[in-house]
Amino acid sequence: MTETTQQTNVAETLARVLPKAELLRETGDILHFAVPKAFDVKEFDTEKLLSNPRRMKLKPEFADADSFLRYVARHGTPSTVAWCKFDPQTFALSFTAVLDDHAPQLAGWRGHVAKFEPDMSAEWKAWKGKDKQAFPQVAFAEWIQEHEDDITSTGASVPTSLQMLEMATNFVMNEERQLKSAIRLQSGGTRLTYVADPDQGTTEAMQMFEKFAIGIPVFHGGQPWGITARLKYRNNSGKLSFLYELIRADRVHDGAAKELIQQIRDGLGSVPLLMGSAA
Image (cartoon, rainbow, N blue to C red):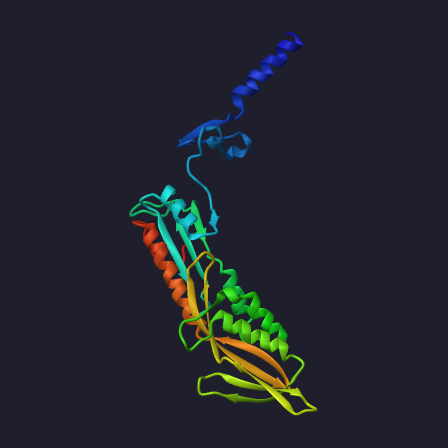
């Protein structure tokens, strides 16, 4: 017997007696094999060989309500469920649509999820960011000038943006003058009397409004909401500083959040919107 023949016989014998890989079962496109090494069961997923994936796996996050609603309308199924998480204390608000959620008597993969967390508007961030913070006299005048487009007049009780600008200009003109007195008027405003010329004993007066109103959107891209603000001053050795206090901004925030929730609910159509978490 030649060496080559002997090697061939050994190889054939080994191939016959050694364990072989065997196909145990098929689960859809997944093949389950028993392989020789301790007969470990291995999986080979053939999904990557298919022309299309078996199911959608995506978690997009949207910047506006319209995009969120359009995506849900395009990819929604009878099992799609939307969730809204709203904290009435912190006003944190977010929406989650599970496109492949569970159906009655049928579990869903819950791997195709769309999210929308509305951002606050630039105007809301600006006015809320400076709420109850003191401004030096000129800095407050500059703030009013920079945000004059947000100032609205809801009637005779609050000034127009032009009147607020005139008041801000007077603040600048009287920056270096000492405050002599401040008298609250029946109209609700305050008359500030400055010493114009200490040597001559002359004075000049200006009126400061007690309240003013702004109209700003709460959420980015939303409709303006009206908010009234109290205008206050502080006298530090004749030097003035000013601040404003937004009146019940929490109610405005709550109202805007509930309005957006209703907008999303209406836009979802037949897709249910549940209050709570999708986790």
